[in-house]
Image 1 (cartoon, rainbow, N blue to C red):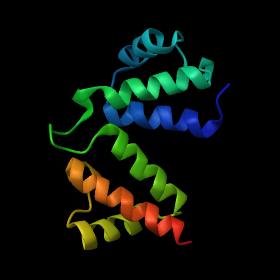
Image 2: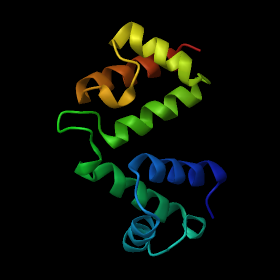
Image 3: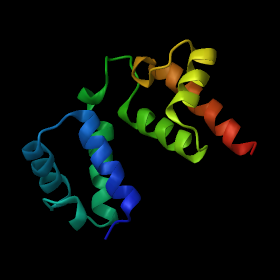
Image 4: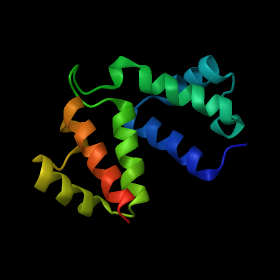
Length: 122
């Protein structure tokens, strides 16, 4: 059984991707063999996340931020204990945008490296 943080990630992803309940459950069944997130084991969770991360249509645009980058930035911001306003101010100051979704793939990589550097310096 997955811990509550991983279950929360699954539901955040579902909401961000705006998939229907039917599509969500069908995807889980196809990828991990279950119809409910509470029935996922660690292997099933990893398969589901890889499926979402590798699906090309989860990018805003071809050169845009990937789903994996978006989730990694959110994870780093969470580890830094920053709220949405703090991240938005940081991003706007250094990367000229407060919205994660408007970053290019290259820009998202720079943000990730910056956040990792800040986290390592704590």
